[in-house]
Image (cartoon, rainbow, N blue to C red; front, side, top):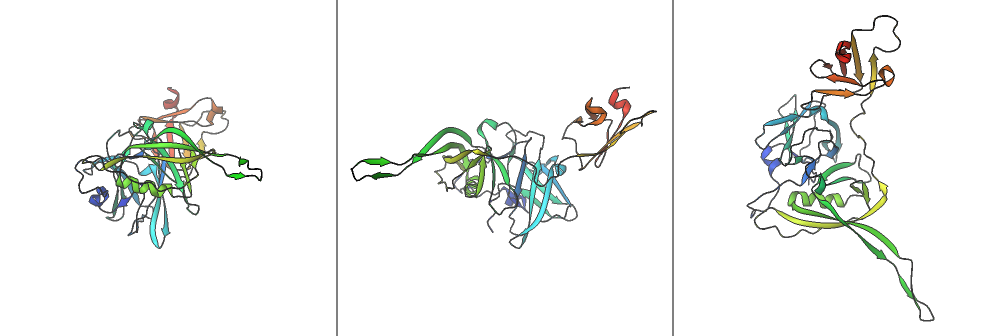
Length: 331
């Protein structure tokens, strides 16, 4: 089984770090795969031995020494299914919220009721490279979900190519049929490694691919180039045909949308209102990592204010926020 996921999961950390670089490489760079902290991504595993959690999992961000940097369990939703007779997962990562800049980090998936653990390949979680990065959404026609990833390649210039046919009339006049023009965009990787290159070719072969929100209409296989000196990387450029009228609309695929399902107090009060204000949501709500609070906009009190919940005075109980009115109004 050939796992060409951009976030490939392995049951051994050393295997997760192995990216099939040239044995002649002495200088290594593995920063082409990016998760933007404020965006949502989805990947589907293709683990040869299978992977399953039955809802019992913990997901953390770790460094190369396996030190835990952040618990993102509540930012990850998992769908389990069988693909080609093997248990696999689709996992959606939503709004990690922390920028790790150019630091290579890993995702660690742990089964909380056993000793099973899986590690991702190195990646970067950052907005630092936004100006030289592009987002891809892709699937085959029969795939359940759109997968998504950001790669460190940037749009350079527009290009175009034209097609037409010619014929000669009986009078000897050469006639050209209507010219059909195809819009092209050129992209550059300043550096790309073998691991990312193989997955990029797999991505570009999919039936449906969007780059930065616009539909790619052609399929192609890219050719690699010589490595730069003693490194594991090489530069790469490619062109894709673009349909600017077909725009991708981002939406959650595994996560359920967060909805306010119950409010206390509610309605009109002619006497003393309750001491506590409760807000119950459809899903578990976790404060962003390192946050001092959360702001929830809702329809309470005729939209006259936003409830501001500070983590110091708010009790978070599964899906419910509980605040004293004195905390909200400063009374």
